[in-house]
Length: 301
Image (cartoon, rainbow, N blue to C red; front, top):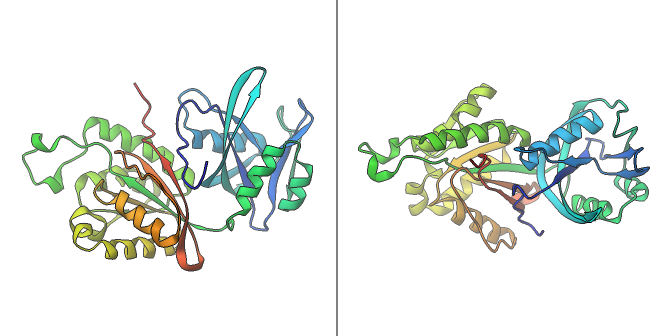
């Protein structure tokens, strides 16, 4: 799927992860029904996003809570004549314990080379290969385009104060559930009220405040794009997983510039309202190493 992955389409049937621990081991599971060794995965439930499915399935099969990071591979194969698609993520295990269950009777935490040796299916080994392409520990930024706001021509006040529309508030509520799956714990926003409101609910949930950064908005970006890029890198280099809420006039150019500087090929940079870019930086030099695009998680009516 390359460096950029759109991983939220509802045609996706299943999701899984390479779950890893601080000691460098990864999880492989044995399924008694098939007598095979695989990476943990499972079907996406109706109305569920792919990241939600990955986190839920990991918990159900392994007993471990995980924090997702970059998208790894999309595996396609046929099951009893039906096409199946499984999206895999890198996922850090942050707690839990395994108990045998109906689907999985054994869990092993193994070094990657040992895990590769016991995996039953070659495509799982391909997922491990992609996992090892980058260090397990990276820096992540969740770059969000603000949710839908009322039309500019229908707003009589200053544009910077234009609030989210009812549809935008629903998008913000969906992001409030999605972003924690990736460990979001710091909040930054461009000055417009619609940008702040998009992540204010999540900040409240986490007991955080939204830090307003003028350099992340269209006005300052248009006059000093290099300053915005520097600020993004500063945010990425700090502790934690930051969420940056910005605007359509900033995000495509900012990501493209960052990718060009890092030698990462991104043929298209979309930024629909309520969408998210998960940017993965390698700590050495803060090189942008991967960029995954998620459309708005708002369920379709």
